[in-house]
Image (cartoon, rainbow, N blue to C red):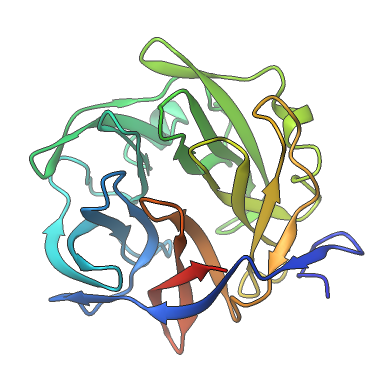
Length: 277
């Protein structure tokens, strides 16, 4: 069975299954875009990312794999515009999406340093944006070693994305530059559907992401693509069929034996955990 927007013949996978709800004690709002710190201690997430909401980054401390204690909004990361989609490498270099200065600069990806429960030295990631109206880089994931950034180049209509593809960027100093090999690496991943919310494994051999069609935004599915070597293109993607419903934004746990993601449950987005088979 093909996911919405996937090419005919798209394969399926049971690699991650048995989803369980994640409880964030002390928090009862929307929970989206999960990311677990590389040491497994903190769960970062954001509330509803709808255009009419001032979306903020939040975090919680681990009790066990499916239970966390809410710590509040993430100090140093939030603005009066949308802030969300956290990711971080092993060195504590923290990256996220923010619309705080988009109207002026057309830049929506930012970096900083996470330490002592807050983000410091926040700065824009220059050199990645098209710097054109309606083009927004709206998702990202950094490799655990900090050497590669997978981000999403999106073209928006009035409120929602009309085009979205994943792009690979390589570290250059304190920033990143798009890889000249990005299109080749992702030739079996990007389609005329929307591909977004990338998540890369520590060895660079497994890519998780979300795919849907622009006209079916509430029918998103999570996919997995793999390769034999870090320099190879990813192979054709397979849909994780055990993750049912409207599911998005996969993120590995610390040992990559499970993934976190969010699912629409009734009128609320909530975080779930699925284990590797």
